[in-house]
Image (cartoon, rainbow, N blue to C red):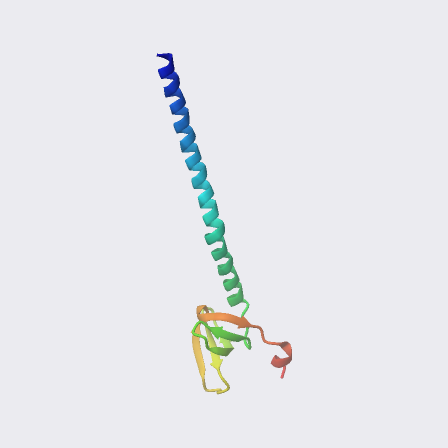
Length: 111
């Protein structure tokens, strides 16, 4: 009779240890997902927001469609971009449509 009680007690401890191990693995997996997926996405979003906030008139930009242009005017949500050497090609677009920004050199803006 005592051996049956000892076996049941050992089985209960193993079951509790199994749950604890499973919970630890779950926490480890969530931590790995955070550092591999969520954290880099947040860093990229911060970089993109900073880039869009630092835009200025005269900066060269590349749109998400792949067009190269120069910023002529900036409002809260929109920018007016001039494409090519033709001064008649000015298009208003959302700031979120800008993929890359290259700052204008001071030597070129003073001319």
